[in-house]
Length: 536
Image (cartoon, rainbow, N blue to C red; front, side, top):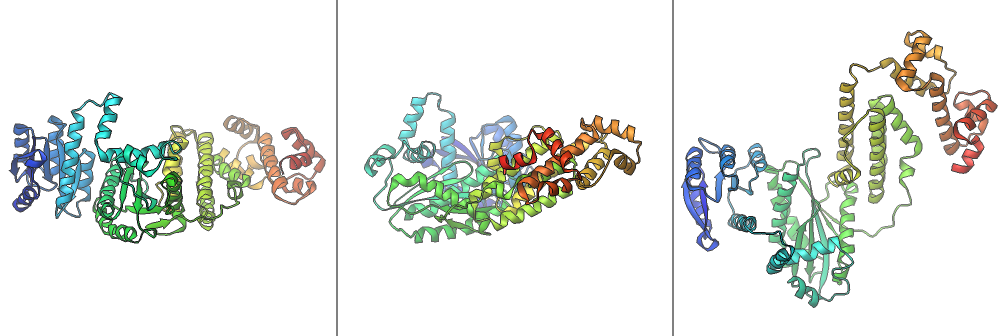
């Protein structure tokens, strides 16, 4: 039998915990009940229990100190912590030490028993040998719950091979499920923590708590319910006899109260539940998972939404290039080049308003987000020498953590701000402000008649010295850099304006159209007319 110690400075709480559980039937033995942290630690050293149930606040050693000291000498002891409200910091620290669960006062019998059952199962798994695949499959088959979860997991990873063309009886037999003729749907539950405050332990614990709530609320009213935690969300396969899901929706709305109580630990936690379509065909479940995901993706157009139903709507004809065109892309990159963070943020603020106008186009927003991220990564790597940036898959995952568009753009700005700060530190001793000012002046005045003498004089330098300094810093001669900026802007005008060649030449600073045309061909290999015909 597994040995248990109960530690709480309130005797009535200890007695309540002891009375709530039939310890012997669960294979447990309460070895001691103690009322202060120091005595509890002495007993732990002596008894070496398997499980310790402890209050966070106690005289002597508090719960956190008790856990820390115990883990140093007995790392395999399972801890369950008890907390009152307004103990967020203590509970968070305990979670970081690897406790199995926390229970809010007043303690609920079902929650305590479920937690103990999970510890018993986990303890059994730790002592078992799971290395052999065949043995693992045998153990999964021996557990009805695990077999059911295996069905949903296989659907997620192999949508074309699990249940296609299989009848309900065959599925029930293979996966120990209890599906019946009726209606089927998918609910995807995704939690959102405060942007920047997420960590794997917090998200994992929150998902486990919500999954337990869902099962408690929905299992009694569903023909069959299967839930799995997958990619920071809970996938629920629901079999019901109610095509309108009235009772299910009612129970999920009641669950909001329980979720609100979680905010004692998970501050600013929000939940969105996305529903796919209701169908009478179990074989359509995978496409329904995608529809439920699409419903959650549409959250940006539904402020403070809790439950979002999938809507079959025509996809927008807009493409990311219609929102983030080449002109915007080059402006953003130019601000990275000139280190003009303020103008960069102004562009992002304008872009956010465009996103908000198109918020209903959820897939378009996602594609624009990935395009924007690619531009920012390129700008950071090229002009700020940023390294150790995350790969594209990490940024796709991050998108799923944004509760609102404000969260998205605030996070992007904070990320850019951090990179600028790092760059500033690296460049502190070799930052060349005059060159940055020169670049900024060229970007703002390329359409005028400007020369090396003009710019060097404006900055207070001898032209010969400034020319050498400019070449050393940028790798280009002043005139070559000016031509590059003018030709790049000419390209944009050729593709995005109705100006003729004379007008474009003038607009980028050349009064001689023939000279402009010759220069354009030299730099691009095409005449302006050929360029417009080829790329327009």
